[in-house]
Length: 559
Image (cartoon, rainbow, N blue to C red; front, top):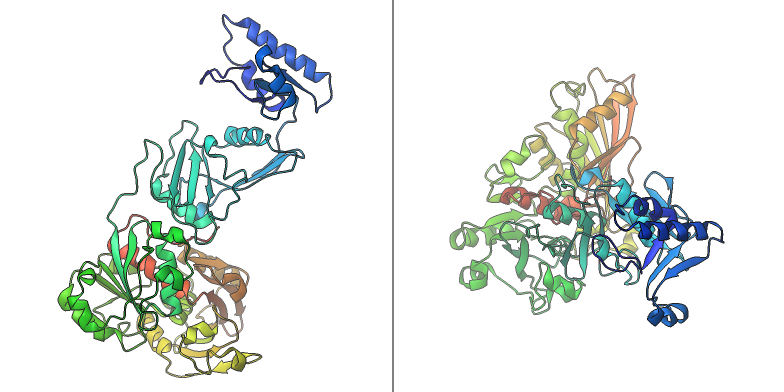
């Protein structure tokens, strides 16, 4: 067979249409006969049909080569050149196709991603030529695999193409660097990539399987969750399964006491390898239990996912028994005090207040979506053309899915009552109205409603501008305000609840201006359980704890 110059191992297939130039350019000094054989084989294949091939084998293995599918030497096929159908799309005609995409939102310097790689029924064995074309164009590239990746898919069986494979459970991320430095590419970057592109609930690749790349640095924080029965608690636990530095060690819910966490939240058994122990069961912890329970004493982070009004009952004993633990309240009990850092990272200057904080109040879902639309006008950047007209009060019309009404039965979370219906409630002085007014330092009006879908919020915000610029300048001002913020997406068109459902970012767009009156209408959407609650909690904890990657554990949206 044909021997590889670097490994001295037999090459199984040579695709001359894609490999000849590289092979012919090697140094054949002292072995000119090898180059002669290569040219003779090419000359033969140039004159015969494309489906023909030449095999180099030995007499002892000729029968295996002729009568089995295993092969025994090197198969030289005529082949066809891999072509670029469009930017990032590599095609071996009628055989294989791969798509490579850059994702700037993953961070500067991170490699492009092989988003898809498919072979036709007759294309198995042709993927090497496509990989070669990809490597010729990209100094580095990465791809992911997970529990839902078919075992016979190209990406699942292409570890031999990788220089490094990072793996956790049945999920992983692989990449090659072709001998070049991967500026900005490290294990934390790999985890962001995996979170962004792997299948839902795929675990994070958290250890290097090859030398030269260290495992993720930093401690593992033990997390206690109080009030885990609710929808937000479930989403928070699912995010922990993707977090490299956090593990759930205490979960409290009177309704679920005695049941395994992974069973109640429909988590895969692989969650036991990534943030949630397989044998962890819910407890029914009361405030006095926190002082006596030894496992609770070891908790580094307490997440309070309790109904409004209940958090102080638990905070007081935790302050006494575990004062060094970080606490984050997902309810409204501490959003109106300066003693707890208000965790809306995308407000300019907020990260400095959150970093190192021991007590964090997580903003409300409506309040996050509304403030995303309001901040560029009510708290503009220096030099921004956006200013609220004097004496004018912005108004926000909000509609939420019924998960926002919680799990306790009521007319606002009864699907039958909500069918073909829209229910208004608390149309003045709503809690989120007061929350936005406090943190924006400007009065607003808020009118909430609940609708028949399960999760997701739509907000229509109206503001009157002073010396309003045109719509293009308004869009540009919003884009500048949220530049470099992957969890806020600004779009020219109006975002929709359906498109933003199950996504981890808040979306702002649809900027419409009445030039005569200066009235600006802005649409924002947010998943109330994710960026409106659980995702934002993880982001705030990452900042507070100084985790190197602020978005660790969060599946970032694709650009």
